Image 1 (cartoon, one colour):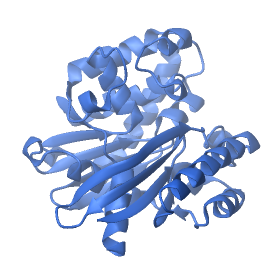
Image 2 (cartoon, rainbow, N blue to C red; image 1 turned 120 degrees about the horizontal axis):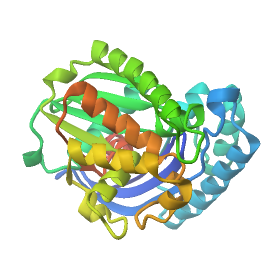
Image 3 (cartoon, rainbow, N blue to C red; image 1 turned 30 degrees about the vertical axis):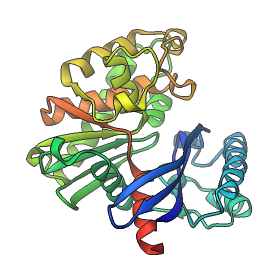
Length: 311
């Protein structure tokens, strides 16, 4: 059994997974899986830099994670930073703050590696019987969305700069969003998805797997959950009609109405409509009729790879 840890620091959230991996079976056992919404990428689409408030929130989460890591023996740790950090002009400040708190150098990975790790985590975390290859894994993040197609291993991938935070900050400013704002998001998504289709043969996909908070929250609403339940959501199948219905409902709601939904994480209240629009747009563009929800994702992919290196 190999104990390792992974931190995924994205545009909206920072997440920690400490797990034991059985190399003989490939099974992963969670010891700690937790998330803090810190909105590291707040305003970065406009300013090109991390705000001091965003850095402070992220560093506070790092302090909390340092204590959890110590309580579990300080296992080998990989800290992965994604879309927001790739774009930030002052990322050196961020990296120095993480290094001083956690003792590791953040890996600012390219979109291609982010996509590959998301694929590994999502596919290995779902029962093989539910996946018909090729599988298209879509990871809707805060600043970017990754698309990766493959079978046992990924064969094609691309990362595009459309995500729930970026789309919300760029266009969805009214409460609820106006028709004009929605149209602007759809135009951005249409252009981004055309880029995806030119790089990834999405028409070959037999299964669509969706990961990350936008997908799981849309699924929770589609399934009328009374609370957020990962056990119910993992492996759930959501149809395109359900995604269309939920997206329309979210776009018609005020912020207060979204906050009152029993499964809604407070850190997703203001960006979930943008995330749902990304999911709706890709299912429309690619003619996909259903999406399988995965609660395992890039964190799990990092852990699997790190465990192999430390076994």
